[in-house]
Length: 210
Image 1 (tube, rainbow, N blue to C red):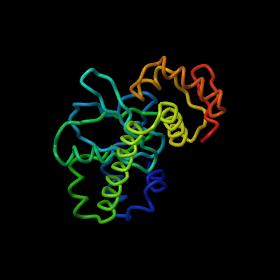
Image 2: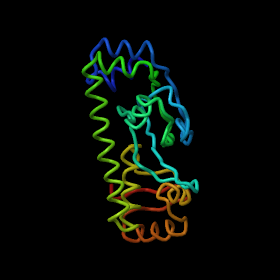
Image 3: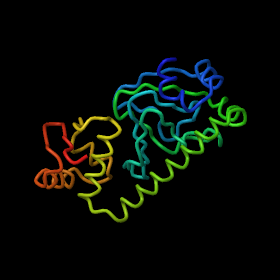
């Protein structure tokens, strides 16, 4: 854990903060597909990613999900941190997009480090900014992009965060992420393959235009 912490966050945090993280954080290995934080769950820890990727989802009143953004190594989720400060329940669902290693930081440390460590304060504020830009991009995608553009961008984003052009997924799983039907996804995927943007395999999609 110490080596990976240094590798991913050593250039961001000073030594005493790294030491504090090592003392207080809980190391976890999360398999692909497992829910890390669920909607309505009380927030007790905030994740810092060491490896892998996480997708952040919202859910409507009918239980349908919508993908908001991805997190990758070196990231944290500012929305989780916001819930920590407000001592409220989670408004998002975090699911491991790939096998993931992370450090869970106790809520009790959040406020302490914000006042004590400038590097932590900067890290959190920059995370807020990054996540806000990603949320705005999601809104723009929903409002202005056609389905084929949305789908290709979604696949490109998944390929980037997992660092693998071959995505292990099904048409149904893609449909859930994009809040649409499997039939629509299958039709658009075939069109994208015909255009040379992707190549379809059984339960796998190869992104050619990354």
